[in-house]
Image (cartoon, rainbow, N blue to C red):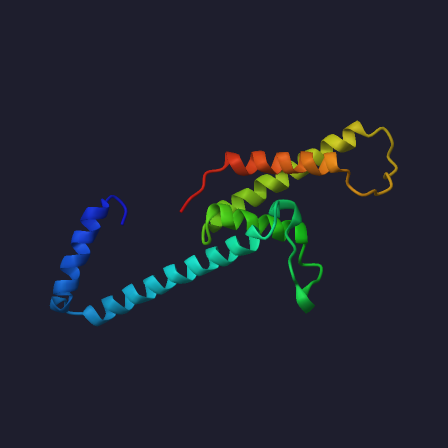
Length: 155
């Protein structure tokens, strides 16, 4: 409860447990409390599952593998999905506004990087694709680490 100390909340809960039947619509109130507790438990389960998945990788921001099954199509991009899962773990499940903002920032950073690359490339011909060098992977990770460490984690 916002604006209340832990002791105040505990005292309130104790009195509520003793006297809740004095309320006219206590059945409805109890059902709402149970529904809220269930949502909190589900959110905790999801966060634990995401944490377990990410713990399997040394660097989940670059290495996380996502199983799509038959649904993989043009709508899914493993890099974006990896970013979404890692950011959900960082920000907390349910903080969708913060996640949207993180996506916007990431998209803007990619756009600026692309523009900078275009302006520094003398030829208009696309360069042949090659495997990423370890140093490029390291730079990408350092950029992502900087981005992640600069955000505020909410619980």
